[in-house]
Image 1 (spheres, rainbow, N blue to C red):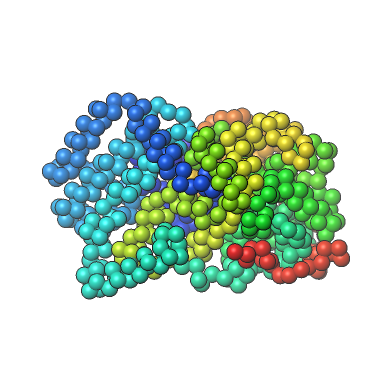
Image 2 (cartoon, rainbow, N blue to C red; image 1 turned 60 degrees about the horizontal axis):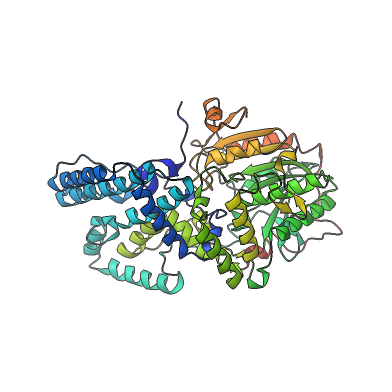
Length: 573
């Protein structure tokens, strides 16, 4: 049995993206690990380029490798090369890449260069943060060199230009001009116009039952005659908008949880402006406590079950440690979805773990007071350049076509800002791995020690997650003091979230958590067909108390409904 590897750890294809999942569901943007660098984004390419130079300088037998590359390129030019693109590499899907001698030679020469760059970075004698930055630069360099990014080097674009008598190029020029004016020069990845929050996305019935300056809490209308007495609070990420959990009927995690008889509440964080730049981790932690107070008052339950997703998992973990330190037992259980708490496991946070970036990011947010979501989006796009930069480039400009319409991609482009003070707190956590260090972090005046938290935890990783490697998610099982269950879902970071039962391709793995060895866990795990949602629902239900009649009205006398879901804050720009 072979352990699935993190995409960043493969060979050349892993670095430049040719082996990655190209489905729309996998194109997501949970940006917790990238916000550290995004406020001063121009520093990231510079430091990454330096890391690439360092990697090449520390690559064994570099001169011999260069000679081998020259031989491979010469063989391609002479028509003797046997190099073939990966089956998943759509750049070379046009038949001309196989049938036309010039295009075949061109693709083989390019692939030889691409793979040489990737293997050199992977074999370099460098630490993992430097490798992550080198991979970032290598991906930009290698994908940028692809002949498919040019008109003459793209047979599909040339054919379309001839077939449309040049009109495809005219439309492409218009698309380019529009993106320069309205999208910071980046090609649009999606046509978001058909998707309206509250109408055809994020439309499950509910009410805002709590609102303060920082967040809204949405209570969703029960769909079963009886509900469990312990309510569920889903703590969504402090970055992005929560409606990814409620995309559409039959594809909504919220809808599914309601159908299991759970009382469902969700955090909807405000999109902060410069006037909110001094909101810190403590601000968000206190707000989360206020939210649980409101939920307990509304439901009459002393305890609340929780699920922290993405960056929301890090916030939830810090709050749980604070509650344990103060003797407060309001949390009944905690789930963590693709949320990495121990940042010593190699991950894309390595892009930000550099002293120059650290200082630049801090100075940048002290001046601007917020991190612009579009800056975060730009960095993330360059993490997956084939899919998120060059594929739209070819589609929009060379082919002159409109971007696709897809709800996940529309959510993906619905960016939010981050308060500068919170960004600096998160940067410190990432740089010093504070959540995994007992006493390393103080939240609301108490030291954070996750090992002292004794509630049961349910931890989910995703096999092809390129932001949170599943081994990093697994490490969460070793940080808390209570019993922990680990589930490895198929798919990627967002693909695992939008994962309703009934998909014949869905699968997940379960197994006993026996120690720190993630690969050992995998070797002893069992594979199941279906969605992990069902497995989680069984786990959560037995920890959610007895059944009682579903409430006929949402909210309470103290916390009256304010407006229908999905609320006001999710719409703020």
